Length: 409
Image 1 (cartoon, rainbow, N blue to C red):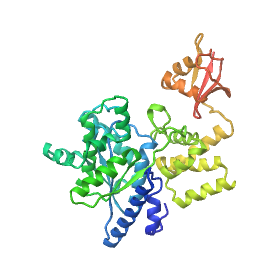
Image 2 (cartoon, one colour):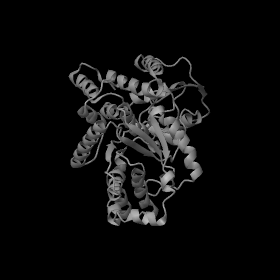
Image 3 (cartoon, rainbow, N blue to C red):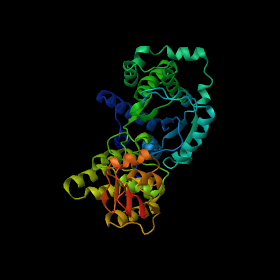
Image 4 (cartoon, rainbow, N blue to C red):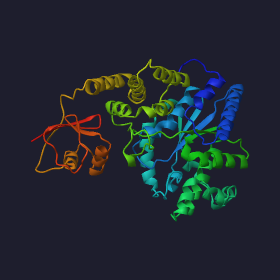
């Protein structure tokens, strides 16, 4: 982002970049309220209090997890106070927002262990010196049963059952547990406890932020927060949500070359989404890139290389990103293969899937099947499309864009 001081309108445009509300009236209301808050903050010479909550339900983060962190970083660079809230108590319940069944309940020990890893990875995006880290157990652990009842009086059962995920579970006769309805109350109370001006979250958090958080703040005498609702990042297939379960992720801890290569594998149709959700580029810079591609001034491949270098630079620095780009050009644009690669000796009558799994070039047989189905497996440049076919013979086996294996007899 440019170091030049931005006008209020420019700040609003930047901070609303990549947001999705599913309703234009809600989006307009949040845009107008954000502008009002920014004007007030400037007049009062105070920063806005901004936060996003993260439930540490696992340890490893991928690029999709960092979308809200990128937005928090934009607020930091504009001089606002950012809190990275670790859901030490909400994680014990489990967010049902994007789930078609109840999450498993974690122990406090598991939550705290995961939380440490989350914070370490988050500081690859956030400015550590400007980030406040808090745990919502600070205030949620102090609530009594009577407190919870009083919070619950602000909502109806119908409001919860009308939520899409609960409605689907009700229709399919999947159980909805009572404790799952507590999650929204708990997250809403986070906003109250921190007297939040702005909360950032994904579209799966729309109810928790726009309904629960704002309603509880109003009920308890606070000005309702502005919800910055971020779009969901698609995976490397460009269609489905980035998720470990579908194997379409861009990990943030797997190295610069891996990150660069995975971004380059994203379909052209998803480039706009990646640019608006994951980069430091301003709306004007993104519009210029899109315009250059549309006019033919910039080749889509070159635009994607620019995108991959930007994302990789964020996580690994300019030097590592430049090296990753050079390696990509050497291997994938010039058709070269690495000089050094592991070897695997064929054993008997192995199928394509046998070789993929036994050589460990894929982490599991299931991943091997997925890679073949995605036409991502080849031997000496020839696609292998049948997992049960006998392995053709010796040669250079390639899986995806980055993995090579010399198969010998």
